[in-house]
Image (tube, rainbow, N blue to C red):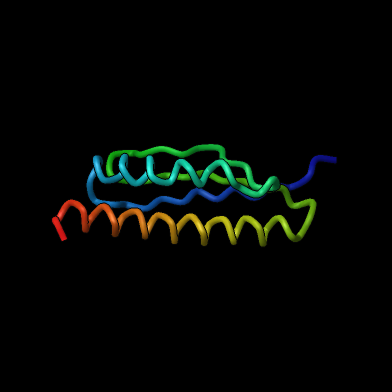
Length: 92
């Protein structure tokens, strides 16, 4: 029997395509250290939107916790990258 799976599509509109590309590039380093149970299926910019598609299997309850933690970490890193880029662009 095939195990169930959870797919999460995270879309964050950063308001500008070049900002999206810069933030996505800054986050690339974090993609290498994902938990083994979390699969990165898609990572792209669609115009000004950062798009991530992540998945995990439902065979262990801890997989959902790892996926949730990964999303939390991803959003924190995205916020930090965005704020740093905004400060750099504004010259402050």
